[in-house]
Every structure is written in structure tokens, then in C-alpha cells.
Figure 1: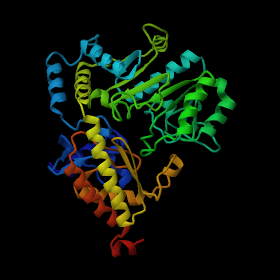
Figure 2: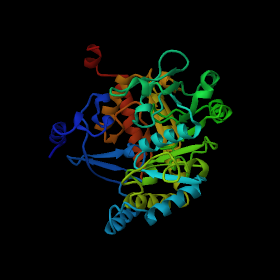
Figure 3: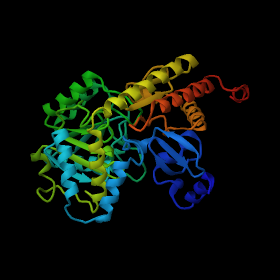
Amino acid sequence: MNNSDLWQQAGQLFPGGVSSPVRSFRAVADEPIPIVRAAGARLYDAEDTEYIDYIAAYGPLILGSAHPAVVAAIKEAAASGTAFGALSPGEVALGKRIRSATGLERIRFVNSGTEATMTAIRLARAVTGRDLIVKFEGCYHGHSDGLLVKAGSGVATLGLSDSAGIPAATAAGTAVVPYNDPNALKKWFEAYGDETAAVIVEPMAGNMGVIPPEGNFLEALQALPKQHGALLINDEIITGFRLQYGLSGLLPEADIVCLGKVIGGGLPVGALGGRAELLSQLAPEGPVYQAGTLSGNPLVTAAGIATLDVLQKDGIYDRIEELAQHLENGLGTAIRRSKATASVVRRGSLLSIFFRPTPPCNYSEASDCDLTNFARFHKAMLSRGIMLAPSQFEAWFVSAAHTEADIDQTVQAAAAAFREVSHPPIAERSEK
């Protein structure tokens, strides 16, 4: 079976032929690449074409695909049962590892990042007795109704639905403020501080491309919610255990922390944690209801334990940092030599290329990227065996499975791709 055959069959089964929108490749005007197997930093499609992988399942695969320790742990766990609907030793073991690394006093396992943030918001509203939530433009916290909102006019506004099927009243419970704008957040709290239950934020934006927080923005996040009796929800679903072992360290005084991705070793997972007095409000101990049939699944916890155990070995994060820095430097050189209108941003193992002359600091600036050039770059990289997420606004993920040779091959491919983008063939230029 070839790629097109599989894609056509999927189109008859699933909306848009996929089970998650970004996989459709529509943002790059291309057909999706179905992957049938993976190993380390390599992906293989239905035609057995090999790609160097920088998607990493959108973040979980910090050790690469099919890491032997993770696969062995999943096999061993599966032999004893794939689900119990009861407390299991794996939950306790993984919970202890997370608490030891993060300082979170209590943890609740769920099945996805969306469930984690949705529950964190419900909990914040319950303990504060307030309704309004503040999020930041361009930050993604899952697809629960109250978080799929976008900004309107002005410095900050109550949300408008960013998806069909969401009641206006639900969207109106979320305010949207520009990322990296402490003054906008201050003005919001001056106007609505006594109505605001919580602020939710990615400490390092990763869903509009990688955009680091500025120091004064972090200071405002730590100070303003607390001053007004609101909670701070730190969405570390991407950054937790990826930038370092534990949390990112960017928002040390957050009230609730959401985790996912890496802590499940590539299997479906989410978690939220915080002070015991807050988490004790969750059922059955408290009045805030949350449940999940497969939460704390024994296969997931086994994969998570194996992943965290490997990550604790000496030098893993240093090695990933070296590889990522090598990639950043090589891409920067390729951009300069090709004179491409692009910029590169990296923090730890997260990296983005933005098709604009300077890195953005918020969603408005990220939206100025040349999406046509990104699509051309993506196609050129695919043709050279480099698999990137099919969106300008998704991060690249470097893993421990990458090698120096992988990075060199990627930089060489990017140099050629940038030249194609900057100097398109005469026939293509004449069509514009």
C-alpha cells in the first residue's frame, strides 16, 4: 500500500482524513504522510521512505521513538493487564517521581493535556468562587470549550468563540490578553480583578512557535493574580520534563501546574498538581468533580516511569542541549548565507523557524510570518528526508535519539531549502 492509497481510505473514514487537524497538512497545501513505523529519530512512511523526525509526536518522545527501555516497560505491564479501573502501583510510583522532581504536593492523573487544563480551570473557579479566566493570545491549552477563544479589539476583551459549536456565553467566560504584555495584564486586573478566578499561561509559548517570555512579563504573572486573589495555572504540558528534569522553573510560584506529554513516554497522559489544600477540593475528597476511566492506566504509567528513569541518567539533558544548539547555529548560518527572510528561536530542545526577519514576541507578530514561504520550505525539507510539523506555528523537537550526523544532514537540507525559498525557479516567479 502506498501513501496516497492510505490517505484516500482515511478520507472515507475520518473527517478530513485525520484524527487531529494539524495532521492533515492543509496548512502547507500538501497531502499528509502516513507513518507506519518509527525507531529512534527516524520515521518511515507507507512506502518505506525514511525521515529524520522533528515532530516527536508533538513533544512526548524526548528519548525518540520506540526507546528499548520504554518498549520493554510497556510489554511487561501489558502482560499483567492493560487496564484495571482501580488504583495501581504504577500510579503511585510515577506520582512519587513527579512529586520528587517538581515539589507538587498532590497530583491527579488524567488522560490528556486538555483534561488537565479543563480540570485546573474548574478547580480554580470552585476555590475562588469566581467565573472569569484569563489566557494569552496564541497560547493553546487544549480544546475544551472555554479555552478555544481569540482576542477581539482593544488591550483585552472577553473571548469570542474560535470554533463552531461553542456557546457565546461559554466563550465570554475567558478573557484574552496579549502574550508578553505585562501592562495589558495589569489593566485587566485593575478592571476585573475581583471577578477573575485564574490566569492560565504556557511559561514558554510553544503553540505559536517557540516564543520565550520576557522577564517583566514573568514578574507580572507571579505578582498580579496573587494581589487580586486569583490563581496562576502554569501549563507545562510541553515544557515539563523537556527543558530540564522537572518543571521549567519559569513560574515557581504557580498555584496549579498542568503536565502531559513527556510524563507518559508517548502514551496518552495528562496530570495536574499543586498544594494539598487546593487539590483536596477534587472529588472524592472535595466537591469538584473529575473522573476518568483510564486515568493512571498501567501501560501509561509504566512508559512514564521508564522515560523519567532514563532522563535521570547523567548527561541526557546536556547532550540534547548540545544537539539543539548545533541545530540552531547551523540553521542561523543557513539563513544568513541564503539571505532568506527568516529567523530562528530556540530554548532547550524546542526550536522554531519563523519566516519573518526578526523573531516574534507575541501572537500578532507571529501572525506576520510568510506562510507561503513556510509551506515551500516544508515541502523542500520533506523532499530531503526531514519531517517537520506541517505548520508554521508548531515547534521542532530535538530528542536524545538524534545524532550529530542527523543535525548535519538537517542543516544541509535546510540550506538548500532556504535557497529554494529565497530564489524560486524563474517559472515559479513568473506565475506570481
